[in-house]
Image 1 (tube, helix red, strand yellow):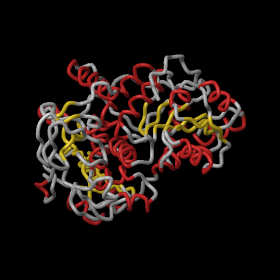
Image 2 (cartoon, one colour; image 1 turned 90 degrees about the vertical axis):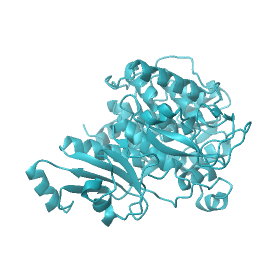
Image 3 (cartoon, helix red, strand yellow; image 1 turned 45 degrees about the vertical axis):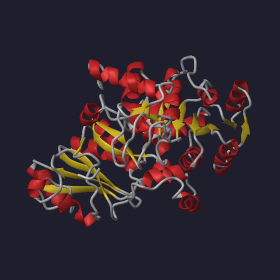
Image 4 (tube, one colour; image 1 turned 45 degrees about the horizontal axis):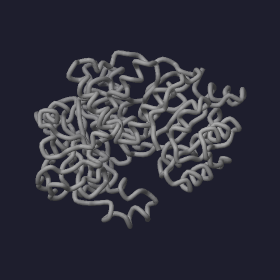
Length: 455
């Protein structure tokens, strides 16, 4: 049965998939509207530290909602078919009638906490929080596979759109030379949330999120997460990121020996130009008939060919991952095993001993993608662990933050998960071989572990 038919059947039977959304910003509000539009799905609740923002997300989706002031009140609202508004994510996650949890926060610590709580209940966990996924996604995906739960990055963002293209290309027998995205914004490593606050307000988005776009951190995070899901590698620290339009891709993102910029085959990268908001693959094909078909379809003249998707629809596509995860146990995108890439923190300005760091989109650091092996050898600190960290010694602008010059906050869940992930990598136990199981079943009970560089 097709997905749309399954959803329509759930609607007729009065047994919709009930979805809780954590984070009611631009993305979370968009997912709320998408869930409310779909047959066979219901918005069970919205959690945000700003309750009025949660209310606006539910109201914008046209859903009747009310504040749940206790865990019991939240559950009553969900059972009665109204969306529960709360500042306490665990109250929604602990509600047995909630089938799926969507993380739309963009915060690594929150992402780690809500993922652990959701997986403890064996709920489908769909994340738009690539910041958390690139940091501890490999161990969270392993936990889900091992327990029969589902952990997945949501459809619609560039990494998942690219992951789907990579899967298609490999199934079709193509070699993936490069998987890349267009960068949506200008690149300026020095911007801070303060310097883009007026622009962010005009665009109706978080100033920290916009700063992470402009300083390149978001692109670095997304492509490192893609590498971990597909096994593709960063070609060099910080990637290449040339100015290139769609018409240039087949000339630029090919090996140096053929006139391009790539040192290796099977890499991730990005372009600054009219590629955005699209994603692309450069592939090669050994099969003569396949090469003939690709040329006929104007994908290129060979030996390299372009597969280009000119859009990604973010929150519009995310509900599809929710439905597939709940109904079929399907993973849209997740780390396949041990990380092959990392997004590490670099000083945005001169940093001084004793200074507290403010994390992604802030005033102190930006992120660059590198191989996990090089990052580990250098003792680099992942950018997802940097919020709340303390500088131990002077770090000049443009220098990498390492275990020698930064002390991370060991009380954070994301830091402890990262430590576990590192230990599992060292032991060789972070396998990608376990298979997720279909999980349309009552949630298991659990104690919710949630409290409120150029080449």
